[in-house]
Length: 253
Ligand code: NDP
Ligand code: 8X3
Image (tube, rainbow, N blue to C red):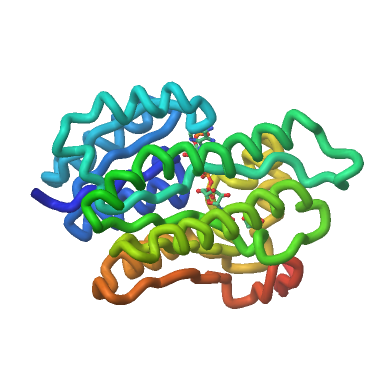
């Protein structure tokens, strides 16, 4: 049987690009997300290319639904080789003292607790089999706070600590743990961040050639394909004209 990659948030952006890159690289896929129709569409495209795909529809914030979805997988599909914890979001770009507590809760529940839920469900099997790879999608935002990034940056700093913690806790096994930290990637991310204000979202990528989901998927696939004794612990991936979370050089438009 081919190797299996489970990708959360596979309906869009980096997650969808990872699905396509890992399929191309010979993996079968478990694609998870909240939009059944989108998952079904991606599944149909992949199955036409002889990739076997299981789809699981659940919200990563719902630990019980996540557990039930994982339990529903046929036994051979429970042997997951690569877990890509990608589902996540930013909501708002406000001063911390003016932010919306509901947005904070959604980011914390998705980016931190959702990632932990999936880790708790998948990693015990990897440890038992003494093989596997966890790739968490962190962010440059986790390296240092940027203006108005506050809580989103904190969730990605938490992803870094949680990823480093897991790497320590599985060090006696052959399980590998990677934190990928992208900078500006043009996806649905900013449309979501600005609650559907697409004009404002477009401005985020003006005057700079941003990364694409495929750029990040290539790095994820590289990490998963490295020789078994090589653990790509962390990668910061930036557009050429981005220096860090705060310094972005834009051409005049
Ligand atoms: P997208 O908005 O394009 O994709 C986000 C994905 O996560 C979607 O599939 C979305 O599904 C899913 N998702 C969000 N909330 C949940 C949830 N509660 N349960 C299940 N799935 C959920 O953005 P990106 O591809 O850019 O984001 C992917 C990851 O990359 C995120 O963790 C983000 O923080 C990170 N990242 C993004 C960067 C960027 O500049 N774009 C840079 C650095 C990191 P749905 O459509 O149902 O909402
Ligand atoms: C996404 C990148 O800089 O918009 O994590 O926070 S940034």
